[in-house]
Length: 525
Image 1 (cartoon, one colour):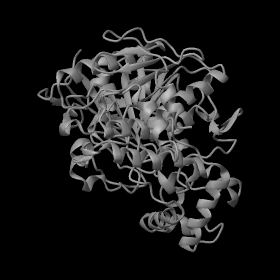
Image 2 (cartoon, helix red, strand yellow):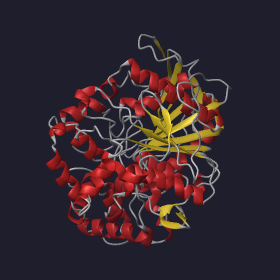
Image 3 (spheres, helix red, strand yellow):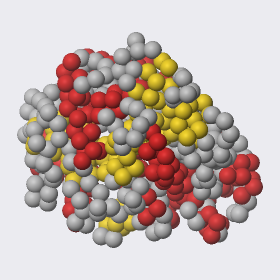
């Protein structure tokens, strides 16, 4: 399987590397076996008079626009991970300029021709509050494009209060305001439909895939009437646990923030001129008041009770599942892959003493997590992990609700008689930092992108990781091309069904498993 050669020369010959888009011609660059375009506008700037309004097409330009470097990202609070040495080492964030002119996308293609390759559109994580289409090196589309013979697209869109601030009670003009960030993504998919054939892509074979908050964005798109027909397959990685807002919750959050800013209802001019930094600071103060902090780890069971920025099930832009109104509707005609990692948010990153946990400490942790049931829970999880150290067992227990969310998303699809659904469980353990990160949240991303060597600080960069990644890239490429995942190096990946909740366990020797963890997860309820 070919991978990117860093020694390959870069060419920026405008005569050979210019493509005309609906807004005007753009120039990219070629290195090795891939042609790249970065920072391509798919929408107009969203600041000033366009703030809190639906996305608009980019203004056409004259001449050839240079698209050699990533464009601005949405204004955001990046969190504290960059101040934690081990975490920063693992992720190697690609920090960038923030600006409200952030509706940009990036393209990697094997060739500018008429080959009509499958298209893979990546939606970044960071919840709905942070991140970008080039947030970490794992998102680089070079190896996936070349190895999978596909066109890879990543994108930025509005986040946090700029993308999900509910002003719907301000009048008809603002009825979609709580979902503007999702409407940005729909605008990007329209751009792909209208332009991607010029980059060697097939607009009738578009796969949307994303991880964590990006996976939740995939789920949201499957519930949006305006997105229907713009994508044809979907993949949710570690994002099934995300919950969407109700209009009641989003309006409450917006009222609290407006009061914090001392902005009256209907005063759009003040909202559009107030510096983003002031607005974000007000939002953070409100969220800190109304949401108690997590107890040492991200307990996803608490998310439904919290106020946060997320898409809203408003019944118009984003539809609810008729049988489960607290969840988003399914797109019954689109095949879907869903999965998670084994250890997700509960790892030894930033904690060299993690694996010193003893049985007494495990008992105390589980008792707080499942009051009155600690002994039954530990016994249930020990049945499938008899040799696990206490911390590793605690990680399995604390992250079981995320695996549970994957299974439940599949079951809701079965109720809706949806297209085939495939499940995976990524259990491969990284060797970096003495193995303390285990199968952490985000570890599977460089494997799907073919970037295990590029992201050696996540994977260790060894040949074991490369071999697993080769199979995962092949499976994803087959899914994008033909609608069903298959690859050398993995067993036949059978679709799940109500009677067979089969998952592909992704480890050094991938294997198909049943719902072997059902009994242990049941001890938590």
